[in-house]
Image (cartoon, rainbow, N blue to C red):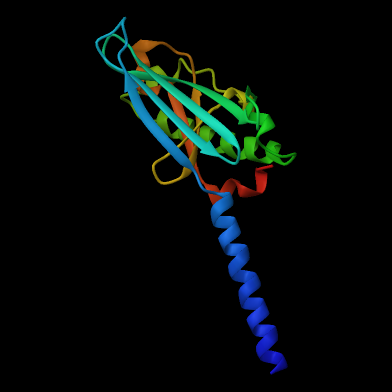
Length: 177
């Protein structure tokens, strides 16, 4: 009987812990569009709530209908919504996350530099280490966190002017506050 109680207690404890983790990592996103008075293409607005923060992405089309995004991060407080930096969302181990993201970006950069069709454009990118606060953060439809960087190389090389690193929430969970 004693063993049954111990096993039952372990099962209940484990299942409660799993349920708590599922709720802690729940992301709620909404996507909408609004008319852009300056262009024929709509502005795309995407907001995602995650761990008392609001992640906002605003997509604006250029004259060819290609979208570039601006990213903002807000802390949802009981009385107010405050704009914060990316580093405010992560814990002290975020430097490891920053390093990991940069390693993935560098691998992609080096790989793309070898592709003849885009190698000339890749030369315009002054690749360096990017700080966590330089990334735009959004979420995919599969509840993955996406770190976006704009290399700032102009519209002639639009197809390589930005890059993103997508990570599973389980990969970044250890870096969250």
